[in-house]
Image (tube, rainbow, N blue to C red):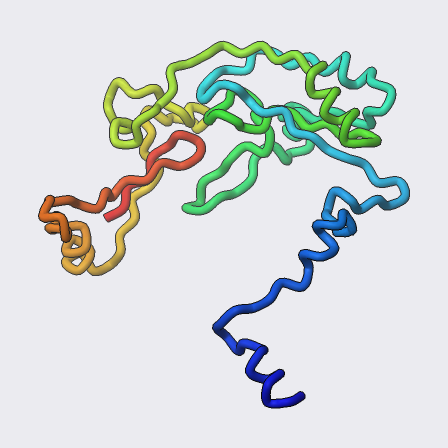
Length: 206
């Protein structure tokens, strides 16, 4: 390699010419959707349009009757196998597929396995889910209010949306970080010590 060629190759910085564009703009690129293997099946997920609603019933009869559908899996299917719930951070649990109710908009309700992706998507339209809408928690800061609806009422004895307390260990230094400060604009502001999880629950940090 000549000195000129060495200068043209950036090491860690500088302009790096893309090498893959030529095949992409000519339609010769390969994406995950382009992969086709013998006997390969495709999946599609049915998601809830509600942020908080009780599942009254799920009818998968029509979807299962689709000639290209191999299986339709619901939360009830997984519950029968002991696989309905999975562990998450903070020693909590979250539904793989909703069983009793949905706890956030877009939560997975059913899963279809079919011979091709088009059949899988079509089968989703054949699944009939009856929901009983419930009041959602739309503000994490009000999730601990006494009148806030309890999201994780599947837990025995649960009467509020409090999940756990987290102690950083050094209270003085932690309080200093979250103490209101003045930004460059001159406006006072504080970092919130609250975070909302996808299930609409509340985690309080200190």
